[in-house]
Length: 193
Image 1: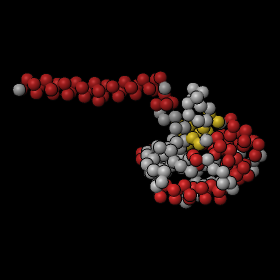
Image 2: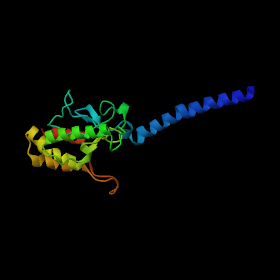
Image 3: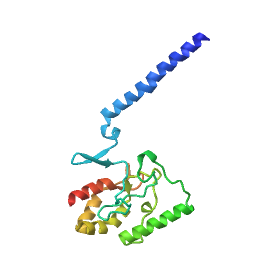
Image 4: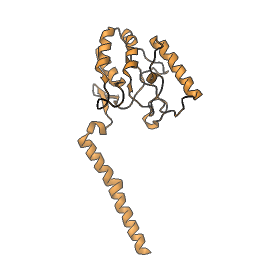
């Protein structure tokens, strides 16, 4: 019995060192060498300051949650208080849930008031499964062009060309849908003036 306990303790210590310390350190080192940008969260910087991550959406609203008209707006978030990477989740509401339907109606009314249109794509009204999606559809982005151009005093054609330059095609040419990364687009927009 004593011998079996020593063997079990020795196996516990060895496996803890190898799998609990060695393996995580090795994976971290490989990630830092092979893919440092991805391993560090794909951080985006403006003038040396981190402004966000290319893989986590964020809000472009004022302190009261009102959308700022001079920025392209992100997809709604159900993660915590909004785009909270520590509380990643969707609402898990079914398509007939009264709370989800009310949220969609509220979002529709807000977008209609902000952008002056009732032809609104689904991604503008529903949160993604993680609640952290940094992308919106090209259709939702194009819908926002007139408002953003007017709020910034820019020619609409200039803003449209900028949007088109940020449309990312399908992965491998056939997987998923075309998207636009809102934070990357807004960083480029800020450089326009």
